[in-house]
Length: 79
Image (cartoon, rainbow, N blue to C red):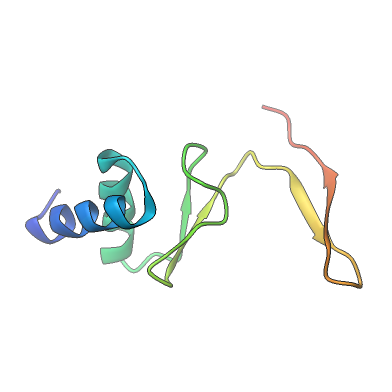
């Protein structure tokens, strides 16, 4: 349920991270529930919200770091 705490935090999250109000409410509900990962293909992949919640796109390309710490594309998931 949408509580007053989630509503207020959702508005703050939406404003702080440039999310829609709807996405802010989803993120706030995940934060209040102490989740550490939120799967969404609509929000910015890799975004860390309030140092706790990481946005993960389940359809994002797979990436791998090489020995120099550079990220490279190793494949793409098909929908």
